Image 1 (cartoon, rainbow, N blue to C red):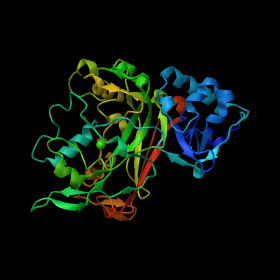
Image 2 (cartoon, rainbow, N blue to C red):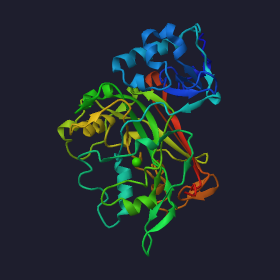
Image 3 (cartoon, rainbow, N blue to C red):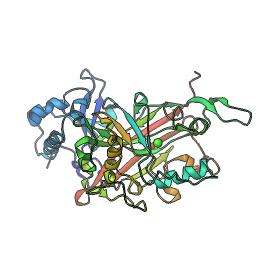
Length: 399
Ligand code: CA
């Protein structure tokens, strides 16, 4: 018997005691925003659990995960163990309260530092190459040697549930550029890694768990018509920077111990600093829902570069990684058509209609809602989840 509802302990519960993601919730009461862990369909605020958490409560007593991210892997492990004891315990600890998720709002849980987005699915990169540059080789020669990435806009990272206004911009026209609301608004289903621990540079792949606190889902909203006109020669810019959505809950990297798999072979040995001594690919299974219909099930195990390799690459030149930095995997696309993580690929550049619950789509229409979810195998046959990232498209704001 425990004091937590039984549903939180069901074998197929993605947010049971083996997951315990951290977030910041606001219940609209006098307590204001507070750090909590998710337990099933409830939020458990941590500040009132000082008796159970001891000194570690200082890391989670405020309105942001920033102090926790700035701590160390050792402290993350101790806190997680104590929270798990609380959740698994038979008696309700003093001060504990479970808030139904329907009664709270999830806030952006940490201050986003630098934001980097990679491009690590060979299936996505080849599909996009074929659609956007049909006359050339789909992959550039560097792609199998390094995780291609770019620096994105940290200031427009928003939490799941935030509406996204259709962006304005220039697009290519037969008689020169046209200006107006994007007509090809798209998503990219991605996995994001939230950094923490000491400031570091040249992080070896073997040290990734010292510098990555946890994992979120990311929707890298993308205006394909703006992107297609602006991206050469310097890469993504305004077609991406208007909004990037992340989960409200950060699942600790430790929760994915049973989901670690080797990354696929790239056809030749990796450069030394990208070699892993133990695998950091993750067997995450994503689902993309468009207006309530699942249109794709991307497979993260097919990604050619792991978070460890991405972090090693990001810092190999001497650039530092700091708590709060966020890097995303790149669009997650598997080898088959129903595993593609963007509508650009699912519609093959707008050529094919996608069936969305009896209606058809190519790109997003105003009012459309996209929800991305993911699970991974946990220990002993359990399931570990990543909290959803959801967003609804609003009409261009007239600006
Ligand atoms: Ca992306």
